[in-house]
Length: 545
Image 1 (cartoon, rainbow, N blue to C red):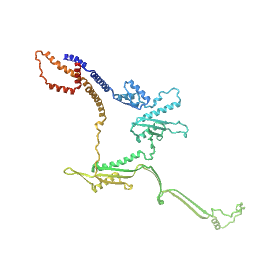
Image 2 (cartoon, rainbow, N blue to C red):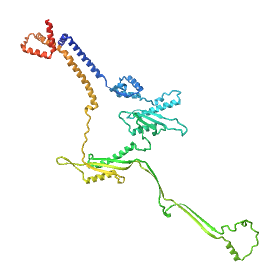
Image 3 (tube, one colour):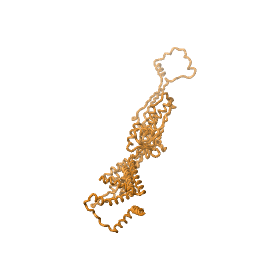
């Protein structure tokens, strides 16, 4: 076997020498193309798949991250336009964890680490500015932890404190948010951001915080404390009330008619007005025996002649009395009469009494609740009853009046129907039509894992196809003359080799071949391999010369 391989090498070299210059060039080009294709396929297979590590980095963060990646020996490259930093997909998560341990990326904002490198002799104004910058950076970092927020900028307006009450001013804050693509913030998240910032700055009220997105839309509109006006919370409360009534109706009718055979809708008119009433009511006065005495006053006045002044007004009454004279002795009866004449007389007796009773008064202060139901509108649709006969054929029939009346009573009791406030109820019986289509599963060729697998298979399939094209279209046609020479030599040398190996055996004499057979074979060779026939004829012509 080894002798055959050693003898085959000179034979191949001899056959190669018999090729024309054009055939030698074609064979060399084919072999070089095959080698280049193999090398390119190996390099392509070894090239890692790059994924985005971070995008939209600031210059400071980008330089720090690249320096860290170089220290960790992690290859990197930039996407088109330099908008993203990419690393091999197998090292994305590890690189992020290592960079996060180093505090990268910082997001272009500085926090309280700004206060760590305070210079000696810094002024109070510069120190206050650094503190405000650090506070703004820390608040921005906190806001950026929300999933829908890509980046945030916060501006604080903190006035100088004053000892005068009239000159004191409240601080305010402005927030600019850059939201991620296709993401929105609901009212609850905006309210959370507002209260987060107002709670982090002393004396900052929530109403003084303004939140704006990257499109200039005011997000903090309606974030007041008194709750006046129709805001998202009130709309959400109204929807909750309606959904609660719908669930009650479906739960009470589903056991009777089936969950898929009942559809209900409720419209609730909610009163969100804040009403406070103060009333003072006076009732008719009851009898004195039933009333309470508040105050009582009595007065008496006596009028008589002995008590009143007498005499003739004038100068005579103001003169001193005359000297006394001896009294005239009168009989006893006369003396008693004189005393009786001089006794005072009661001419008038006046009495007054004043009694004040408590008034029957009622003072009431009423605060009306917010969110009361003013009116309900209920609509219920029930499907026809379905039944199957003995053969399995399904049929449906409308509900009877008794069943409709039963549904009416059940729905009214479920929603607390009140005619005094104008509630309405409409119940309809109809045959449902199934227009719904089954949920379509995601095709296998649209799944992410299958797409990645298809990309890998396509890459290696393209390499294989190109290699086969080079082999069968370039190299094999160039090797056909060598194969023809090799077959010819093998046919010529095989009988001699056999005779040499087995001298005792008689040589096998082949049967003579007819001229017509050789002619047909020559025609077939001329049709299949015109180049070989042309080269043979060329050799004949050159030999005759």
